[in-house]
Structure formats: structure tokens, C-alpha cells
Amino acid sequence: MVPATQTKPRDSVEASVPPAYLIMDTESVPDGRLLAAVKYAGENLPPDEAIRRAQADARELSHTGSDFLPVTFQYPVAVCILRVGGDFALQKINRLGEPQFQPRQIVEQFWSGLVQCKGRVKLVTFNGRGFDLPLLELSAFRYGCCGGDYFLNRNRYSGNHLDLMDWLSNFGALRMAGGLDVLAKLLGKPGKTSCSGDKVYHWLLEGKIKEINDYCMFDTLDTYFVFLRTRVMAGQLTLEKEHELVLKGKAFVQGQMDQYPALQQYLDNWGDWQPWP
Image (cartoon, rainbow, N blue to C red; front, side):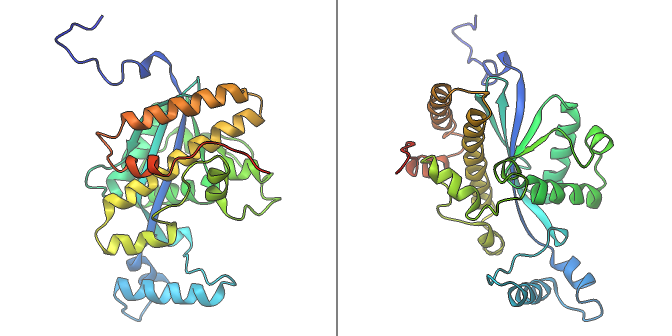
């Protein structure tokens, strides 16, 4: 029993159920210095001009007009991780590198934390195999971080990672048009609101690093609720249990608003699951 004069530690309830999953999302920006050195070697371009050139080249080659650059030319500016128990309940929000959100600190925290987990938890992402994990793996190379068993034991066909986009698209048989936004909105969850991935670099130029990390947190929460529905599909949860966990998840988010006031925006766009037609 906690004495009346003491405050109960926030993690005391969380610790009663061991963590089993880490739901993860990242946000990144182009590396102008690397682009200048590799794509425009010898032209002495400043980093911002190298990014503009590379984005223009990408738009010209894209049939959709996208200026998105390959992950090899990017570095992370936000990583959000939700700790989830073996009972599938939310336990904790962790925004790496807070409050400065320096890329090296973000990357070092991610890999040191993963090493400490020693394979006891499963990473859950949306398109993590195609983007988020390569981004962090290349960043481990950049900063000289040790990933321990993650790198020693991984292979092409198995690993301690569930990519929900891979899973729902039958490993690429379907092109998941609309991505996470579509799936979140099918569940009545916020999906994309004030930002999207293509705005992150412009927000960084405007000094909106906190807003970028808020956006990353929203995407990670959407990923969690999509994860729950996939566990219904896989038979690990009943639909009734999922409804219960969603309500608990909403209450959890409400309880985190003192620490993360931006969560009010997430709740303002919250909706209930009402399938149609």
C-alpha cells in the first residue's frame, strides 16, 4: 500500500504486466550535406540548395509528383515508442531525445533501449521494414551504435518485428493506397490532421521540432489502434476485448495530457468505430 503522503509512481501499475510490444514510428528529414557530397559532388552546393535540387529531381522522376527522397539520404528527427503489455493494453509513451530532439541522441536512445530489451518484446510498425527500421539502421551506422542481437540474429524471413503494412498487404501483393491514414479512419481514429510526412522538413526549417514530435506521436497512436484490429483478425483478441482496449486506450491518452498537451488535438479528432456500408 502506498502511504497517503506519497504519490503512487506512474509506472507501478504498468509494471504489473510485462511489456510485450513496442509500437514505433519515426519522422525524418533530408540530409543536405550528404546529398551535396554524393549526388552533386564537386559542385560545392550548400546543404539547403542540395535538398532543393534533389527534391526537384525526385518530382521530375515521380509519376505522382512526389519529392520524397530515398531513406539513404535522410536522418531521424522524431521517434515515438508506445510500450504495450502482453494484455495488449497501452502502458507508456516515450518520445526519444526529448526535449532537445537531437538526431544523435534519438538514435542512441533507440538502440541502447532495444539492446536492453534482449528480444523480449516485438517491434510493431507500419511500413517499418520499408522505411523506419532502415532509417534507424543506417543511423546506427552513422553514429556507431550497437544493436546487439537485433543485427546478429536477423535474417530475411523472420525477426522480432511485425510490419502491419506488410501483414495487411499480404507482403506487398496489394498496394496500400492511403496507408495508415485510411486504416485509422476506417476505425474512427484521427489519421492525418494538421500534418503529413511531406511537411516535416518545412516544419523543421520553421523551428517546429516539438510539433513534428507531436505528429509522430499521433501516428504512433493510430498504429496502435490498427494493431489491435489486426489482432482481432488473427484471433488473438475478440472484437469485444478490442472495444474494451480502445476505451482504455482513450482513457490512457486523456491521462497523458498534462505531459503531452498536444494530445488534446488527437482527442478532438477522435471518433467511434462505425463500419459502413
